[in-house]
Image (cartoon, rainbow, N blue to C red; front, side, top):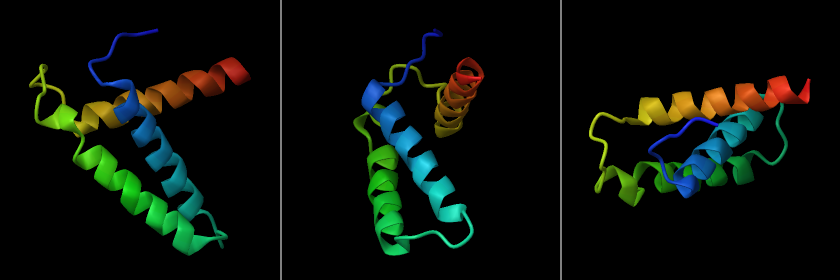
Length: 81
């Protein structure tokens, strides 16, 4: 497992955001209102997480977080196959 500078709760929130977004992007999703509300709540958790204000690694960005989450999903898909 690679070391990353992001707190676990931030990574978990970003992973949940990505899953929710993908569910919402499916053709004819069910529970659209619930999914949209979840996406908004998760967006707030990710965007306003204290990590971004007390950042000890100034070169890290939200793009780095997205890359880390996507890489983690890819790793899990490969191990499941």
